[in-house]
Image (cartoon, rainbow, N blue to C red; front, side, top):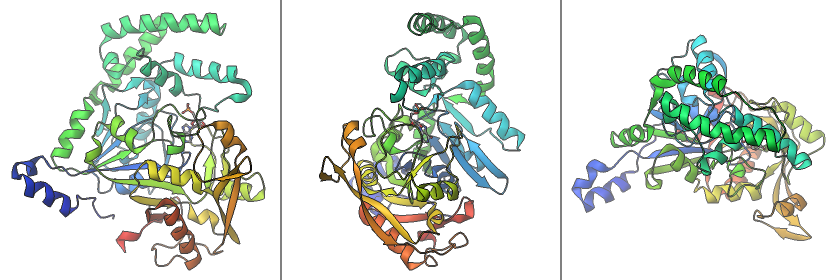
Length: 453
Ligand code: IMP
């Protein structure tokens, strides 16, 4: 069991000594969990582990492009939209306003969970969350084809087009879905313009209004019991001193502003994005836990300076079972990229680090990490804005000794080989933050909490 996440006594004392009335407004602050790299860092497992003490888990961004694999005594669960806290029956699970929801996908995911005996009645869905509608995956696919060799390598789930509509103020939301009359009117306007785009720009057949409308109406009834103003629920829970975890999808290197644009996702998988997507204020956050793999992976296109195209990269892929949860695509692999990791650690105010999949490196004689980039013959230690510079970036490696010891059965930080700890301490210096959690395998029990010792 992990210790509950609690407000520091000093903060409570400062607030209460200045104004005694304020004490009743002081809340148990929230913890954010985010991925520090390009996604797939094992956030789901960490969220699931921490959800043992959290009373609420809120998913803040992304859509069914995300994939969380959680391994429990009941088997392996692959989740896309439902927060991984759903496996803890005492936890309220919220899909926040920052998420984009494809209703059919969510309904099948809920059915899959129910079939395996998981109670989903603790799910709550924001009435402000935007919908992924049938034309969005279609436009995602067509736009990727149009980009040809410059394709982003999206998950083709329609998330980019759904977020584009949201920002362009053409989106339909869960609250629209709950009102058949309003849905009919708005869908007819939006579909009209999307059909023009499909037929005139891409030469594709138009989509049928009635077909889409009827399936949406059916889905609306299934989702209705879960829909609520989740920002109210989240704020009420904070006032009631409940512990809240905010779960970001993807990874901070895929952030729309600070990632390797345009090879990014269309939301903000960052601490700031987590606040926005979950409906909490920055000063209600106490901890930002960033999850980093002990090495790097990336799916889709875009630069990855520390990528390995050799046998080492292949061995990492096989040992780490690096194949996408959502798409099944083999992930690109490489050594840890310290430039990218430091970039995300600083921008997200990371307070605690989780290093996952360290056991994947158990067999290597030497471990490397990319300490800086060489761009146009010049060393650079921060992430360039221009993607072309990042494409040109060559890694400057630092080499450390490997530990060549199996770690999967180790359950305490103290047991870990000293050379492995040496690597973790080096990562702490890079990230300027303490490694609290270490993952030595996919199981729940294979997550070492240094503070529990
Ligand atoms: P999209 O989010 O489907 O538009 O894809 C944009 C980029 O983000 C692509 O490179 C995807 O492979 C990547 N991406 C999206 N979701 C995930 C995820 O959950 N894990 C890792 N990469 C992701």
